[in-house]
Length: 519
Ligand SMILES: Cc1cc2nc3c(=O)[nH]c(=O)nc-3n(C[C@H](O)[C@H](O)[C@H](O)COP(=O)(O)OP(=O)(O)OC[C@H]3O[C@@H](n4cnc5c(N)ncnc54)[C@H](O)[C@@H]3O)c2cc1C
Image (cartoon, rainbow, N blue to C red; front, side, top):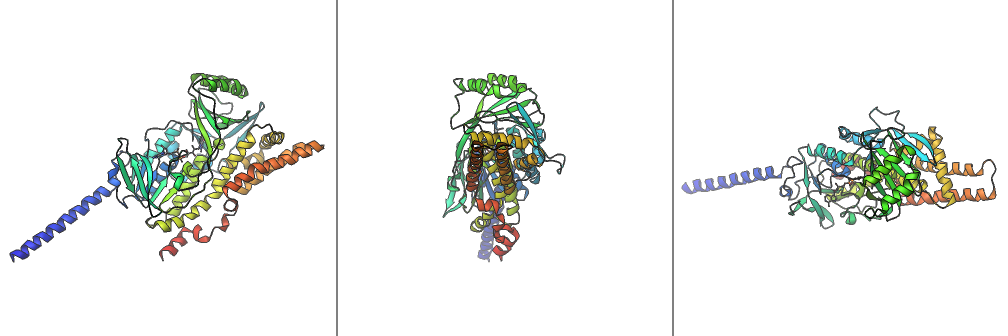
């Protein structure tokens, strides 16, 4: 009897101990309220987060919020949680704002002194033309938004971190953890130098244009056609308020747009891989002697004052077509995945559009644990994103070339034709601006407008009296236009860009896919 009593006590103690242990470890596993910079040790061990997001820039913070809102447990690891101060991502196109709204993040442009942008003013050889975004069909709030990039990102980080199932932690991810070709998580270091591992069924790498982690997940073919040199003009009035300003300068364009109620961002494009040195004054000299004379008179003094003030920043303009290696357990997003020349300010629109698509694809999945299935399932993501992403990418590459000066006479004619075509107004400018703004990113419309510009250029050359020289120039113009656009389209993938209908229905319909996979 005493033995039975003793045995009962031991069994009860063991059960009690096990129960306490389970309860304790469950509490440890729950993801802590975000934004507190909690120790990463809470999240080591498989299955404790559903998704790890590397990088909380534009893409990472928007993704963390949207997946968190859908009930996923998200662990975001960001190298630096302080407010970024950079010259990138300061003008969100109206199409990007619509995507931001779809994600429920539209209030992130509130209270940051963001400016409403309703179109562009294009300047060439002392003439200007206004190109309005076709916003008539949209709610009054919809427009382009320009702001300090860091303020916008902090708002999105705060919003993601306000969800109880999102943990936002400061740390630098050094590598992905892979087992038998499947990514299981990441290794990261905190600010104090401690190294941790975090595991999740899905790791989304959003570590931006200088990504160190993308190498195993894609074949990066990065090109750097030019750099932007950034200045801030204080307390100056733009010739056309609430408009982005594009100056078709020589050798390449200069942009102006407001980023707050008192500041105007100026980005001067410098072609090639190298920029004049800022340290020895070469840059200031270049800006004042070569660029300032090409700037509209209303802005020149403020431009020179900004150069003299000395806060000159540079950033390489990179382009990289998306070339993923679909890998179980991991995905690339944002600039780590795909880049285009920033002349059209399309990067954030593509990133946000990709996030909306990914969110929609993941929504019906009850869990993300079957890495092989998820990887196969998400192959559709790469195809479905093409019409939007490739249109914006192709337009950026093509417009940068057309807007840049060239010693080639045919290219000079194409540049002039483009300015005049856009100045025609009506369907000619609206169609092109609808593409640029991300409001109607359709590949066929892009090709139609591009060749309409070329044909307009041919008309300028041949009418009213064609000569042999002009006919030859017109032929070269058409060849030059084809030489600009077709290689970019080829890089983007012709079939996926123009024939998305050829995607097997299996991939296009998440619901079918799940029924199939789980039946
Ligand atoms: C000069 C220039 C101007 C531009 N202007 C515009 C514009 O006006 N409009 C527009 O739409 N687009 C613009 N773009 C493009 C736009 O900036 C990008 O498309 C956008 O910022 C991409 O977002 P992202 O989240 O991928 O990268 P980012 O916003 O750069 O975020 C990457 C994040 O990852 C973090 N990170 C990096 N490595 C690690 C690591 N190892 N571990 C943890 N965290 C890490 C970084 O700290 C950063 O916070 C511009 C680009 C350039 C170069």
